[in-house]
Image 1: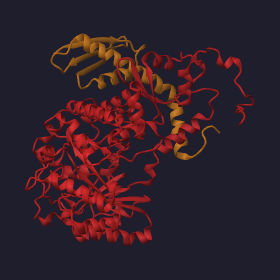
Image 2: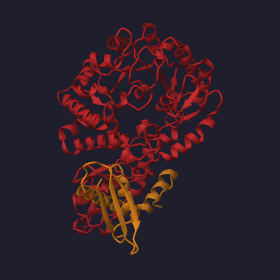
Image 3: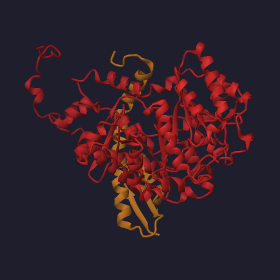
Image 4: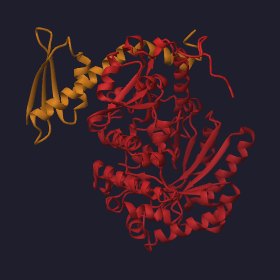
Length: 492
Length: 97
């Protein structure tokens, strides 16, 4: 048995240490807070660790009136909200934790999206891309663009690179995907990066030949599944009205050939989804998924033209989120392993020291520096949402063109650098003081699209309201519902 | 539309806290902030919402103002440590040495 540690030459603090003392001897460390409800604050420290405090406790803390012999003081000390003479390692440790949270910035761009075609066989009214009909090959990426895109991609210093094929329906230009995979792999013999390929597809054009290629090159598939057959087919019309049948068959075949976990699915919330939270989750469970991503509609592309994006409010989506999350947790208590991915992402931000790399929730924003998009025509966009915006005529976040502009032209462009500096939530009005700042982001494309301003007026921002309420819900469950908290802790 | 008029002492509330509280409620009201001749702040909140009440708007503003004042206190006390932490996090130098 090991002996007790000796601290500053003593095995135990002297008696005086345990006596009640006022807080005049402690110093506050940088922290932010936001109301959780009428009686409590969520308080986050410099490195993003959180604690929930009663309002009066927070006021005592800041006024230096907190009893330093109290358990809450010990907790605040241990979690780097305060510093005293006995905690001389705290600053160094806190700086390391902060540095770890920012560590992905050093690797720079790791996600490159190739829009291999805008053609699509579906005609979804909520489409955020503005697809073209399946026979319009003018909207396919050209070979000369591909070569420049690969050159550009390998200029990134990131040791890991994800190549994601997007559309339209990307598999309608599968020949180009084969070519890009071959060229990237050939270049990587010298580059020696860790490469992961992902094809975003509705699975309708999937063939055995495509699956064999995916297996040979360890390609992951990402598809769309909006819920049960009636909802999915209503959301995602195609000739024959068989989108759900095709996606279900595609998921099954992909798992047989590639392996169960080599395909994931995303859902998009439409007005029709709001009344079907249980049916949507049940469909994911039925099809063998262990995760679901509750994604609201984004205000871009056809979603704006058709009015789909305006058919429900952020508060309606939040009700849907809370109910669906509650049902997912209920299923977990019954032994059904399924998690909600956005919640899991935020939990990792809240409860672990590691960054997530999720583009929408970063400061500075992940545009350009976490992910970048090569459009079919060679245009380079700061994010997938930026090119969606461009397809309806707004090129505010177009960074350049692969044929005409160099890597330096693009990465050092005023369009990118000005936007990045504006999206540091550490300096954005309202974000700067918000207790959720360490977990959140400042989506400039969203705010430009909705408020014609990349920073946006946060009191009117649905992005802000949605994320704040999602985080409040998660923290309420962690604090007030032990059974839910136990399950959420398994999602890390 | 209802209006709320308040006179706030600048010896109790920082001007930054008053401005931030008004900004935070910007989805609900517009604010006119003026310094009075005796150095206090005259604040007029003009509700943007139909059906909002004077008492509710005033109460919510004052609650927010106390939060913002608390934040200003924290920011003031922790500014040197924040700068030290940032320097240490990105330079690799030991702040304690």
